Length: 310
Length: 249
Image 1 (tube, chains in turn red, yellow):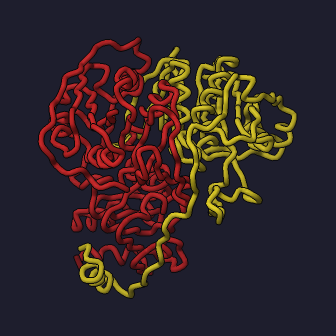
Image 2 (spheres, each protein chain N blue to C red; image 1 turned 90 degrees about the horizontal axis):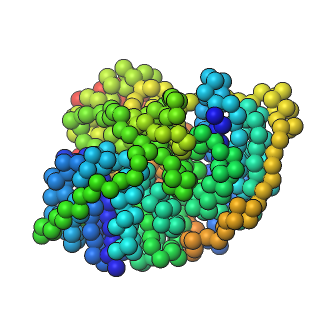
């Protein structure tokens, strides 16, 4: 049977995380249909149709689906589920919100954040902040899966698949309504797809210092900016910058950790990066145990110097 | 309004876990256990709603071994009023947990169920969403702010691009994220008082729920490790190495 991939998008653009989830779906095997649910989401659907390995795009548009609310979206997925034996999505905030609801409505387990497809029903997933890797076999007739996208490469472009309109207005009474989005806009790359990430910790000391010292280096490198939980909790950086066990999980080519001690919860979010650089005053900081290149020093001196040297 | 808060006993967040050499799981013997940090945030939020006059009673529930009573006593010492222990030695998957919690919710009829967004042991991030599905209620996951109104709640959620605010009909399930609050510590007198607070014992069978796993765990192994690299002496040396040796600049 076929696989249904829930696309992550903001109506105008398709998130590149869906292309990585598609790679996982293709490894499971079978026809992959992509569901684009939203409003005015034709552009996202067209982008999904151009990904290699997609045999059909289902476009469902309605007011209820405009803001990725879990209740109508999971009702829609459940109504389609009969034709699929696997329902899969990237483990983005939308995928993590919606898919467990779908799984419970279908009375099946969810397999969260897979990092490897071993076979059509066997997967590897991290537990304990990535300090152990579990190999699990699904026994339910239908599989509901979220994908840790940092572990899969993006699907390439392919011949255009057909986009089928499945719009519906049949939704049960509204349990939730959308009020507002406060989405940060930035010219910098997104954390999930950036090739270089520079990330700051509590040692930055304030929101002003964080901006003053980190951002010029980020701009010079064309890097995305991340933060440790401590820095986000202290208000030095916004929540969507947090990298770690319960924040974003990233695997860029280069990760530069500045003033981050390296708690296991933070390492869980970045230790699959290709090259890790640690800049820290404390030469005993655990971050140095995972860093390819360590520089012991005061980041308020090192970072301006780095900016000049680049 | 009554609030229901599920809490889970997990390996303390400061413990560096060890995988058993035979690949059958993670070493749990003689390891410090605590309340899942996200559940502490849930308990705290329920207590604050009560203190603000938005909720009357805070009921905490745990599904787990007899020792999960300690976790419930911690929640009672923080200020929860009553506890339910659904005792089982089985490893209970999120779907079965949600089914048991549905049974508890049908008996307790809470106006709001506050669930930690994820347990730091299995990192599933499923239970709250599954519970909302089974109860047929709204869900507001990854909450950083909860405002209770008349028959509804306005919840600000931490999402990938920033924040999203939604309004949900009550009763509903909210799952908590890190920035919602900073949990209190229990005072010694409150720890003493908590020993006398009511704690009901139940079993999964009382709710007609089977804890039979749906996922077969074939193996548990260490992740491929990373070795410490080299220390560089200067920024110039760092940039040089990143350019020539690592080839990432």
